[in-house]
Image (tube, rainbow, N blue to C red; front, side):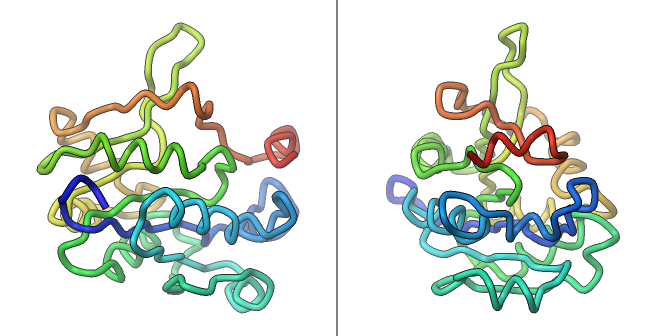
Length: 201
């Protein structure tokens, strides 16, 4: 948990079909001997999250069968094909009331326990802590994970639609966001196409 603050629940968005990659759901991509979703759920817990909500969608039954989600709360977003917004809402709704909510995406294998722990330590009540990664010019750009206070997470979920998860709320409340430099831990990149598969090595 965050320095005497409410416990943190991670919401791991893992509903996508991985269409552009063409290898089935990204949740099941092999990463260090296990499905990616299982590895990342473990890193979220090891980094200090009290619980992990995994939001499934594409081939949910297969993901449940092939991935070890023991200790996680798995929920399904039947409207996953409409975009991330519905998955974000489903995950936040499944998080315990009063918990801070750390939102992560399943296609970023650079997410590890050190990065999670850094965000939890950096969190200030009433504010949002977002992982920041340096671009080619050395400027920090906002990425995932993003850590919300309880009320902020629900406010952001209420605005989520289509492929915009928390983006609408974050765009409306930039003054509430603290960027936490995580460039030494990851570049914040995702696995989107075959050219990104090196990230799973």
